[in-house]
Image (cartoon, rainbow, N blue to C red):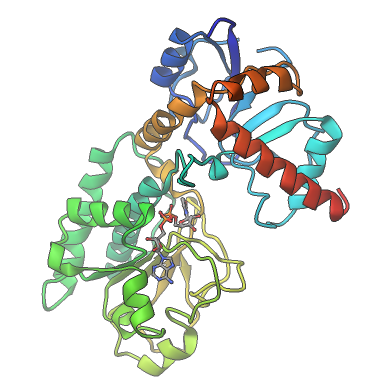
Length: 377
Ligand SMILES: NC(=O)c1ccc[n+]([C@@H]2O[C@H](COP(=O)([O-])OP(=O)(O)OC[C@H]3O[C@@H](n4cnc5c(N)ncnc54)[C@H](O)[C@@H]3O)[C@@H](O)[C@H]2O)c1
C-alpha cells in the first residue's frame, strides 16, 4: 500500500455491548500495513482506550459492529458494520434512506463473503458457546428454585467455564440418573459447534449431547419428543424457509408432567420471524433479564427460554479477537476510499484482483438500496 489507508473504529451504543470489531492487536497489524486507525472512546469496550492508538477526519471509512441509533443523521461515510437491514427487519427502509440522503455506503459485515459465498468473519461460534453456557447456568438456577439474574461479561473463557462446570454438577444432583442431557440442533454450523464445545468443556459427557442437523430433522417431522427428553435444548439452525415447529405449546401441554426439558436457548433468535420453529415465546430476552417463562397450564414443570440476540458479548475478549482476526485479511484489501465516492481507487484495486469481497458487498448494498427506494426511501 503506497498511500495511508484511514479507518475509524466507532463506539458501540447498544447497551452492554462490550465487543469490538478491531482489537489492539489487529489495529497494530493494520497500522503496520499502512493504515491510520482512529478509535472512538468507548466506556463499554472490553479494551481500554489506552490500548489503542487514536485520532479521524470526515472521509474515513467507519468500522463498528452493531446497528447505529435510530432515528439518526444522514450517513455520508462508508460504514462497515452489521446493519440488520437486508432481511426486511423492522425499520430497514429508514436505515437505507439515511445512506441514500447522505451519499454514504454500507459494507454489511453479515454479508461479507469470499468467492465461494462463505462469510469471511462471523461471531456464531461464540454465540453458541455463550448460549449453551447461559443455558446450563440458568437451568441450575431454576432447579435450585431461583431465576437466572442479570448477567455481565466474563473477562475470559476460563472464568465462564468455572461457573458452567459448577452448574453441570448442580444439574446432575437434581437428576436421579445423574445425567445432564442436551440436544443441539444446527450442530454442524458455527453456533452449533460453539454450543457443543461449551457443553463438553463444562463437563457434559459426549454421550449426553445429542447432535442434530438437517439430516436428522428432515428424517421425520417436528415437533420432536427428543427435545422434551433433554434437560437443555439449544437451537442453532440457520432458518431459511418454513419448517414444522420443533416444539409448540400443544405438544408441551400434551406431554404434561412427562417432560425433562427445563431450558431452551434459542441462539437462532428468529423470534419475530413468522417461520420461527419455536412458537412458545415471543420476546428477545436481555443480559439484564436473560430468561422468559413459557406460559403453560398450572402444575406443569417450569420451562424457560433464553433468546438474547447478542450472546457473544458474554465473552467479549475472545469473540472480538476471533472476529477481528478473521476480518483482517479482507480489511487489508479495503479499497482506498476518498469521501463517499472512491470509485477510481476501487477500480484500481479490482484490476489487481484484490478487494473483490468489498466489490461484492457494495453490489449487494446497491441492490438493497434500490429495493428501499422502491419502498419509499
Ligand atoms: N443470538 C446471537 O447472539 C447470534 C449470534 C450469531 C448468530 N446467530 C444466529 O444463529 C443462526 C445460526 O448461525 P450460524 O452462523 O451458526 O449458521 P451456519 O450456517 O454456520 O449453521 C447453521 C446450521 O443449521 C443447519 N440447519 C439449517 N436448517 C436446519 C433444520 N431445519 N434442521 C436442522 N439443522 C438445520 C445447517 O445445516 C447448518 O449446519 C443464524 O440465524 C444467526 O443469525 C445468533
